[in-house]
Length: 150
Image (tube, rainbow, N blue to C red):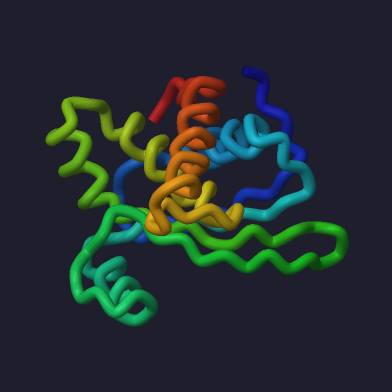
């Protein structure tokens, strides 16, 4: 899949792990697979400690998690601000080992998951909403390959 830059992706890394270029290319592929244009997405790659604090503050769950999404949905100068996806590099690495996949594959899964949440879907409602959520994740997974380099 050819990457076209019809969207904006902002990356902030507070931990070592994947290169920003890798994350940016992956995000562009996901957004393109979803046929999104003129959207802005922010990604934060952080630690278990920071994501735990965010999870506590915004979800009243005092524990680390793998991914959080903070939708914005506002339009600014013709660009739709999707929101922020926060990924714990520590949890992603542990889950990759547990699932027997590469860190890149797990980050791809988490980033897709976070972006689907930003689009307004929520698997936690169960039933048809959960089925729709999973179908979108599966569709995007089938449409993209991760960037080649870390």
